[in-house]
Length: 351
Image 1 (cartoon, rainbow, N blue to C red):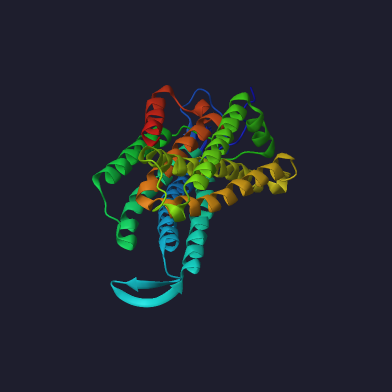
Image 2: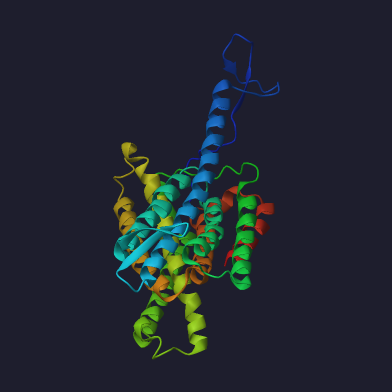
C-alpha cells in the first residue's frame, strides 16, 4: 500500500528548551520543553490560516447556494427578459441567458475560487462538512428570491443533513489531528496508485457513468417539454428526483477531489510539481468533471426545484467528499478512534 508523505500546515508544535536566557535554543531531554519564538509564530500563522479556511468554506457554500437559485430562476423563466426587483421595486429587465450566465460565474467563484483556497488550509473531510451549510443558505435564498414555500419535509431534510455536517466537523476539527493539506506530485501519484484510493476513485467514476446512462434514457423517454402530455409514472419520477441530483453531487465530488490534487501540485510548480505526468492527467479529469457539472446543472434544475434537488445533491457530494478525504487522501491515518463515530455517523446523516 502506498504511504502518504504529504506535509501538513498544521503540525504539532516543535518544542525545545533554552539553555539560558541569552543563549540559543538547545535540546534538553531532562528539562520541561518550551516553545521557541519561531514555533509560536508558526503556530499562530497556522491557526490564522485554519480560521480563514473555515470562513472561506462557509462562504463557498453561501455563494454556491445563491448561484443555484439564480440559475434555477433563469431556467424556469418563460419570457426572454426577466425583471429584476428589490423590495418590490422594479429595477430593470435583463435577458434570462445573462442571468443564467451570472449564476454560472458565481458558481465558479463558490466551488472554484473560494473552495480551492479553503482546501489549502483545512482537511477535505472538514471542508466538506462546512460546505454543506449551503443548505441553510439555500432555504433562505429560495424563499426570498424565488418565493418557494418551505415545507416541513424540506426543512427537516436540510436540518438532518446539517446535523450530520456538524458531527463531521466536530470529529475532524476538535483538537489538532495534524492532517496534511499539502501534497507533492509524487504524493498525488501514490494516492492514485494506492489500492484503496484507486478502487474508491474507480467506483466513484463508475457510479456517475451508470447514473448518467439512466438519466439519458429517462430524458429521452420523458422529455421535460412533454411532461404535461407524457408524465412518467409517479414511482419513477420520485426515484429520478433522487438519482438526478445525487448523480450531479457525485460528479462534483470527482471535481473536488481532482481540484484538490491539482491545487496541491500547482502550489509546488517551482519545485517541479507540474512536471510529473500525473499533473496533466489530473487537470484533464478536473476539466471533464467540471464541464459535466455545468451541463448537468441545467438538466437537473430545469426539471426539479432548488429546495428539492439541492439537499440530495450536496448530501451526496458531502458524503463522497468525506470518504474521499478519509480513503483517497488517507486522512484516516491521522484520526484517533474516538473521532470515527462522529465522522462516519455524520456522513450517514448527509447521505
